[in-house]
Image (cartoon, rainbow, N blue to C red; front, side, top):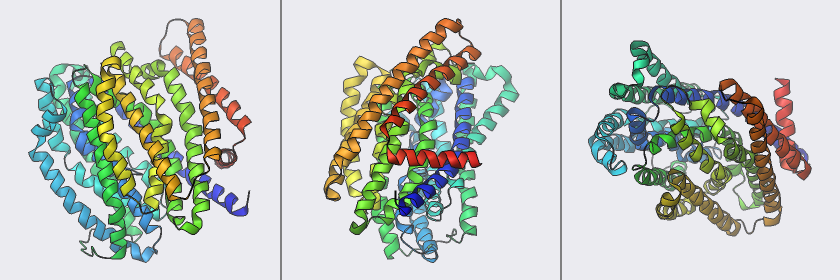
Length: 534
């Protein structure tokens, strides 16, 4: 390995350590938040209504305002190529433009709340429908703050600020947990009763909005201190830097904006299935908790690197960085998906099954978790490839693929919902992600004048086989543990899950180490050294 490669590996591992620690804290709070919601409301009217009301404001917060979202990606791709003193005017102009547009979106949601809920939630019970309408009106300002948060994330990432990016989402979790805690303090165990659904629904909505506002304020303070822009209105829309951001951000935003369309399509088909909408929320959190940590570890350090290697002279090294991203995705996502498939039921029982969350809900959510587990690798692998196109200044290609996938998702939903029920809708999403990744690879091969297919595919196929074996081993360990430990309770479930997961991880680690993949070995060594030092 060359000195430059060793330096890159050290830098990557150092950033990854910071991101891993901060994101882990944030995701733990997110998991506690969802456990609190599950215990208080189960799959009842408040939680179900929230799943529908969250579609537009919540998804804008996640997609536009999230780390690795289109605003974040566009700002990083551009600011990484500019000097620090040039950043503030670009950031202020983009903030002015985005803030004005999203203010219109916010007002439109308030005025059209009933229409939105009736479109995505046909057949909802009347009480649930009424709660959802109130919730979307309360949470609509999140659309505005989503854009501002996303811009701040990109600005801070370009300035090599990683801790705040990864930890600030916990503020939304804290406000929701606090709201439910106050509700429980006032009403006790009565809050699980259906007559308190309206109050519970309002607590969820106001807590979510308060968290978004706090998240924006915290990052804004850091942004000001670094001299990276204020709330000043600036209309320099024709400057080259702003034009470059708009060129990437516009198609990327539209592409990301299509995600809620796919989710709305899924919910349309899911609405006749009792509890399915809330079940998606619970299962998705179990997926997004580890996925968010790993995606931040992989994507945050690679995004500026991709942007700096966008010139054709640097494409050989760019291909090495793409391979690094895909192999790290495979070595983390493939075994994680296998464990989720084999251990879905004890995972859901430990995390959620208490209070209003009964065994029937566990069966629904565990079946959804199995379907999500199948597509873990392609979900994150697609994101790695999309960021390469953005770094190359090409936002049109991901946009076109996203447009095609709207129709593909609807077709797959229609085909899979009847034979598989709610899990069929998740499998449709997996199919869409597979389609996206294959198309992106094919087009990237043409754009970069060829990719080393053999060097990429052989280790990924080997890791896939190793993950299947590890999943079977963990499931076998689970069956043996159940026979030995007998009747399940929280303690025995924790023991079963720990033993089975360790067996699966051990088997996969043994197989992966035998494959001797250089990028993976170097990254693991550097991360191990960093955490042992701490």
